[in-house]
Image (cartoon, rainbow, N blue to C red):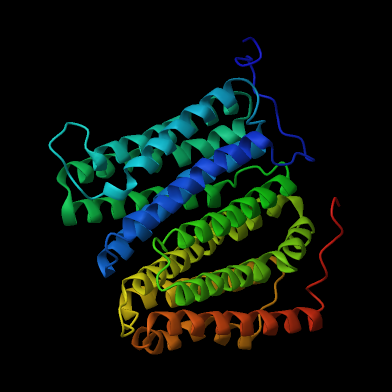
Length: 403
């Protein structure tokens, strides 16, 4: 028991890497993200897509400080581990009630209020641990002062919105997010968070993205409940797999290792700010894009299971999830490339915007054809990006494993 409650936190070394405990924490976090798919799918509308986006943003930007915390001190040791386990429990509770995030009930702690309180617990634990860690670090304490004010101010609209429900809840939770993230950006601009280990930082974001891709694919596969008709459902599931492989390839094959190497070459005094923008901000739309594509695949499988003799159009909502999610992922990837490798070609911008042009076509096609069109496009983009990477001197081959 003495080891669990060590008096002082253990600083993270420059060679620190992601621990098994942090991966376990991130699995619970990604479980909460996939529960947003359940919320948006019952049934999917333009409103639920927008509300789901708000939930995803709140979740992701409440997780970010835990990554910075794990980069400052060992998250798997002592009181920091106990605090992180408390936050893990709050995230798990939030995940359980997420599908009813806008459904008020007669009980005192209904789903919206429980979700808001769980969010508050995760933020309060962050602030408490960071305050403790900063007791011997005046620059960190200065950054924390700027960070803590908007983070706590955002709690009020979050609680009031949960109590009011409906459109007021949507508006007030949006205000809470903007106050929270806006204050965090101002704080990091005034004095960036210290970055001890770039390997840990980039690895942690990459692991969450790949877990999100995997969990999103599982969620998409769960959309096929009866597998009838078997032929079309299997084709849709395989198309979903190919699309997810393309998303993996576009980020992890060459770009991710090259980006890490490029950020490592940035002068130490600027490295934290560059990494914060490239990873802390840009990876949110990467994850959200993957989640929306998974929602679209799940809905396509659901439509195929409900079809009788005549295929039905995919519709605007499903097409927006598929093609809008793909556009968001590709644009975020391009911005990540620009911030790290400092290279982005006009043709890549055009390719990232093509899904938005295909959206009106996709919504008019039968569900399976709409998914097939997106998958063919992603295969083409992956092939094109591989050619660009091979000719671009900024992009190199991935280093051997273990380096």
